[in-house]
Image (tube, rainbow, N blue to C red; front, side, top):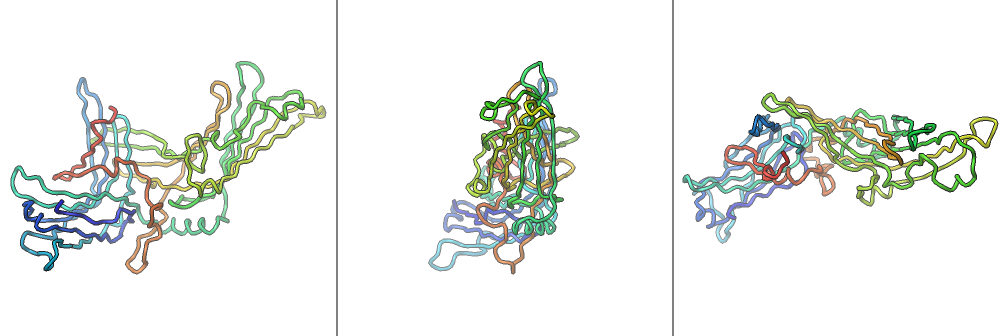
Length: 399
């Protein structure tokens, strides 16, 4: 390839100066027929909604432009490599708008939406049959969040502020007949207006069950009694989900999906070692007499989980064509049909970082663990001559 683009793929913040470099290889660039090279910064919100109208499938697309800037860095004959060298290095610079939306990608049945950003170097070739040479570098972006940075600092130093408790209770029984048992969940979180990214957020989850009234049997102390709370982290569903709203050319749609598991909990969770180190899981069981007769009462069982979770998702945002709302779902399943307790807790997620300056050195968020968790489809998308986003997975998407 006669053109190479060097641009770091770490996360960027609105208002940040973007610096990169393009390398032109000689004489390949001349032999390739490239007349001019320019670099483009592009960013947009896009929503697509599809419907079947009769036998035809129609896909409506609507976009909102966030960033659009082009700079020409070389024309044929304008510059050559230094004597004895075969590579011409050309720097470029863009100022990312401060009013940006967070990078995200959502794909659902007959709909998709994204907020995407890309730096692209284009080698322009003359002739109808000569395709331009392109090298693209998608990158992730978050909005600056000065207030969230202060919250993040407080969490990093050990949260000592107020806490918020979310509770949910329900009744259940193993079969069709008989008395009901009770189950309850209590989730204790820092009482925060927003939750910052890339920061351990401590929580305590209690799952409390009370059996139906029964006669005391010493054997019950050492065996399962319904409803028994989970004894292992795999028995607790603690996940981050999002609700999406899309609008394209007057067509509306919505969807929801799970983004990831939190706190090292859940049967499909594969948490990093740092999360496992902070995970505490305890179980307690005791007999509670219901009156003067200590032989009649209920078993009270409690599982207590203490852990922390870290968010790497797109922050909450809303535009006229695409919106994202995040929430935590807690769900515990018990034996029997329909026996579960579930609660959704809406949370506002913000970046918790600020725009770096040239004098601040390496940004606080830079590093392999400090990037948004985006699907492969975000990084694989390309942009054609008309700057229309091309999704290589579109033909494989479920309709």
